[in-house]
Amino acid sequence: MICRILLLITLTSCVCGTFVVNVTQSSYQAEENQNITLEWTFTIKKETPLTSLYILCELFPNDPNAPTLFQLHEGVEVPESQDEHFAGRVQFDKDVLREGRIRLHVSRLRTDDSGLYLCEVNTNYGWNICK
Ligand SMILES: *[C@@H]1O[C@H](CO)[C@@H](O)[C@H](O)[C@H]1NC(C)=O
Ligand SMILES: *[C@@H]1O[C@H](CO)[C@@H](O)[C@H](O)[C@H]1NC(C)=O
Image (cartoon, rainbow, N blue to C red; front, side, top):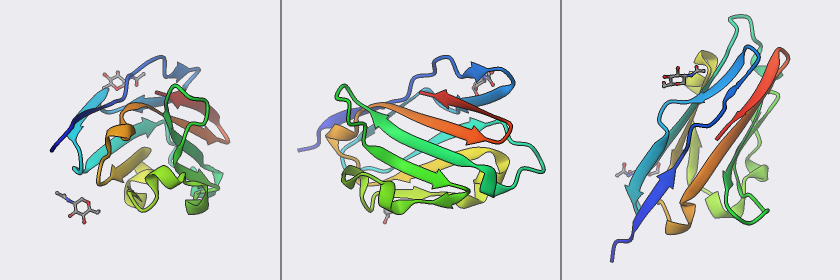
């Protein structure tokens, strides 16, 4: 049986000063076991060293223990911070980070992946969150 699931990213207030975190698509719909690519964009300066980037992306469900989808610390992926819920199912596209894109391929979707996702981006020239 294939359960229909809905992965939803809603675009809310993503602007804070001049540092912008945005989504390229506000909602995604997929079926169980399919793959999906979630993408956020953020203001990037040409000379930004990747080591000044801190990123945290999580599923933001109703319960307070939001499972971590992805974390980047000083430009380096922190796989051990990833929640068991997403273990082995998230691939980060490092090549597009320089363009200010956080691209996450999530595979083998489960019904409990449904919900609101957020990414928080911190740099030495600003920070913001986009849901
Ligand atoms: C966010 O992205 C949407 C769609 O790509 C675009 O229309 C909108 O202008 C962007 N907002 C900001 C603040 O960059
Ligand atoms: C889904 O992603 C997995 C892991 O990256 C890959 O092995 C598989 O071929 C993908 N399936 C589809 C239908 O793209």
